[in-house]
Image 1 (cartoon, rainbow, N blue to C red):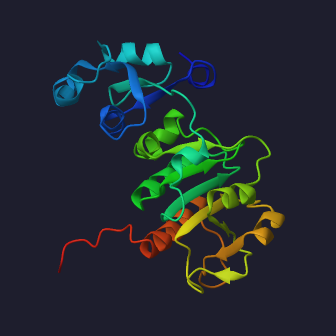
Image 2: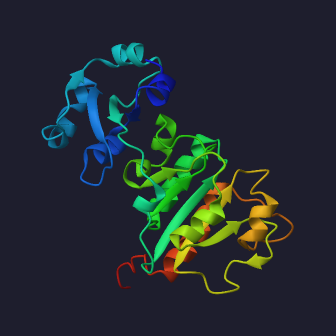
Length: 255
């Protein structure tokens, strides 16, 4: 079983581990399971979610699971999910004038960064994640695992090749914020919008200069002469700031 065949041609994806399986089978999941493969010792702990999963459950020892999948199985929990139809951006972004928080990923080809960005988007209550044609698949097994399952519950859509981020933001009534160390405006310098499209580029090259000029460019102030953050970390910082403005954060228990 080669994962690239499942992802690229068969409309399926692999979920690994108990946390992500519970999200796949839970009420917030945007996808459904086709089948499950479990080690015998994992059955009892998952009994509460297996009864209503509606998919066949196969049981095999870990060496057999590893032979079937082609990679070492440590957690003893696997599932095959079904993608279903692709969503359009208009279908997952709240219409104006409702507040909206949308994360946009442009050219991210590292599955760890994409998974971590989805995890941040879920943590700060983003409505959706949009990906350009070159960003890697958030339903790749490693991306799902790094996202702690957020890729299974956070709405996302992919833009067609060559799509214009700024034109799409205008169409959806969003203010485009282009995050770059070279931008002229510091985060916190001016009020943030209640309908925002936060655009991040890949580490190294970042976003195109023309896009930054056309959008509202933002930078995160940093100490000294060091101006480099992991792209998912940068996303988390700005998403948190936007979520505060839009009232998306829990206040937490009183002290």
